[in-house]
Amino acid sequence: MRLRLLSLFICLVLFSGTVFGTVWCNWFTCAYGGECPKLSGGSSFVGIKSGGYMSTLVTIGAGNFLSSYSDFQAFLKRYELSELQGICFEEMDSILSSCITSMENTNVMYYELKTIAALIPYNQVVISKLNSFDYDGFLQGRKLNPAVFQEVREFLSKGDVTGSVRSIYSKTCFILPLLYRIKFDIDRKTLPEISNLWELNQAYSNSLLFGQYIAWIFKSIL
Image 1 (cartoon, rainbow, N blue to C red):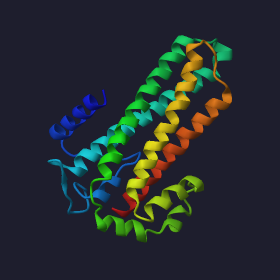
Image 2 (cartoon, helix red, strand yellow; image 1 turned 30 degrees about the vertical axis):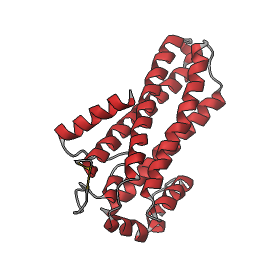
Image 3 (cartoon, rainbow, N blue to C red; image 1 turned 45 degrees about the vertical axis):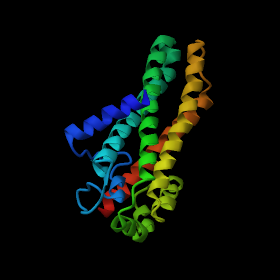
Image 4 (cartoon, rainbow, N blue to C red; image 1 turned 180 degrees about the vertical axis):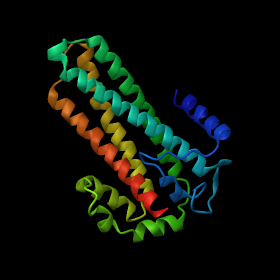
């Protein structure tokens, strides 16, 4: 299944050209050279320009992550209204199944991304910009989550972009078992514990901010 998905994405790159998203984890592929809107220079990977292939994976991964998060919010809404509207396990199961599928797809994308990232040399122009970036100044006045921003800073200030990619993959690996636990309850016609939903919602929220801050910083230096 994973190989079939990746084959499809390679075809998308070949036929549609370079893709750059804007919201979640985007722009970091410029750290690896290849196709970058504002920086020249780069290399190719297995006959495909690394920026084009990696950026397509990032965009598809971001779309799937946001779809999964959106579905989970729809699930929370249905859970919240269950006392007023009654419990419909079939509807909740349908929402949750879609949520899980999208997160599984995100996991596949970032497994591939972390594998590729480990093989491609950095663009030292971008790494230098990350090393010298004013992280304190960026944090001030933007009302960012300090803990999440610090996590991003620890990777990017050292030029460890690949480490941040691995971290995103790990976050998807953390979220999936939480989703499966809730799905297990719904399959048994049992409402999940609210504490489990809070834990999952926090994991989604922190992951969203982590990817958003990465995109924000890269967009600021390019």
